[in-house]
Image 1 (cartoon, one colour):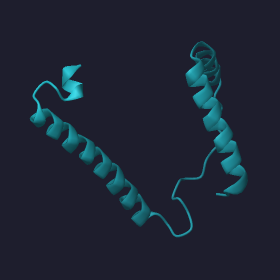
Image 2 (image 1 turned 90 degrees about the horizontal axis):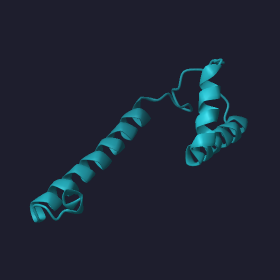
Image 3 (image 1 turned 120 degrees about the horizontal axis):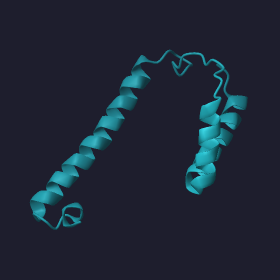
Image 4 (image 1 turned 60 degrees about the horizontal axis):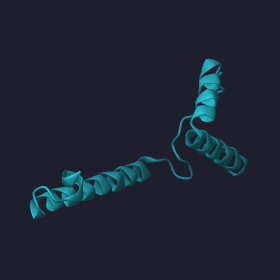
Length: 91
């Protein structure tokens, strides 16, 4: 616990934590910039979707959603946003 709070090695630990956090943010930004530079104009460069039969996966996800309510709420929110987005964005 002391390691995560920056108390174990004092300032050195805090500097290492800061460098790690800055590297992760930088990595995310560079990835976004690389994607933005390579995508075709007016699109998102995602391959066209296909209809996938979920079968057992849907049953397992539904069961986990009932057993783990926060997981179920997250999956439900993602499905709702995906449906709404699908009405406004065409491939």
